[in-house]
Length: 121
Image 1 (cartoon, rainbow, N blue to C red):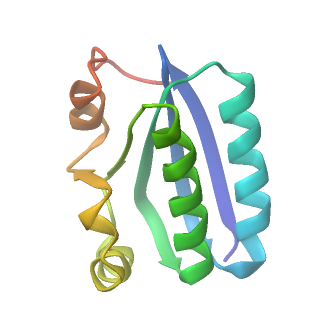
Image 2 (cartoon, rainbow, N blue to C red):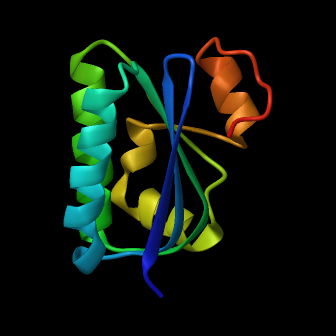
Image 3 (cartoon, one colour):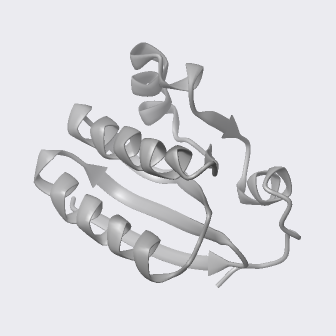
């Protein structure tokens, strides 16, 4: 299964929804698309919805960490939400939750970032 990516913007927040498998074959494409969205949409914060991501390897962690550093360098936040059990195990083992915030769902992430939680496109 390949990776499907959906980007949406809500006020100053970029929502990244990942579906499928994020491995070294998909990592470069995702990184480039994500950087383009950050540059072109004037967003500050990022929410990454991992609910439908069934697999991720270390190259996927690298993409996440790189975008996290990019967002943090500008004084903004990146929040993870709705993580699948399979992917959560990788984040737990890597220690990524020591630096990245995790909340239950998109509404909670939007609230954390000070954006009204109504349905996003």
